[in-house]
Each structure stands twice: as C-alpha cells, then as structure tokens.
Image (cartoon, rainbow, N blue to C red):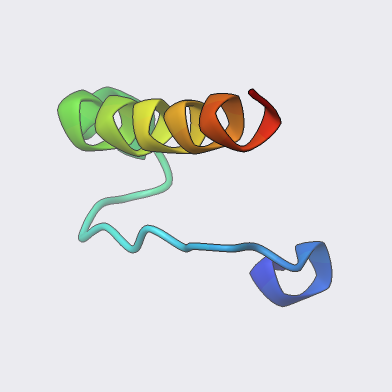
Length: 43
C-alpha cells in the first residue's frame, strides 16, 4: 500500500493492527514529524 501511495517514509511497528492504541507515542511522533516536514516544505 505504501508503494501505491508513493510514501516518503514508512513506520513499521511490532504491534497488532491496533498500533494507535498500543503504541501511541510512536505513532504521534511519526505524525508530528510528517506535519513538521509538510509545514516546512510549504512555508
């Protein structure tokens, strides 16, 4: 799926399908990194 979306980066976690609940800090850091990169690129 990441290939079809032309993802710039992929986060792989050792978690079940519920990684948002089981690893929220890792997921939030990844989202924050992406948002920061987008804000910097469009500024």
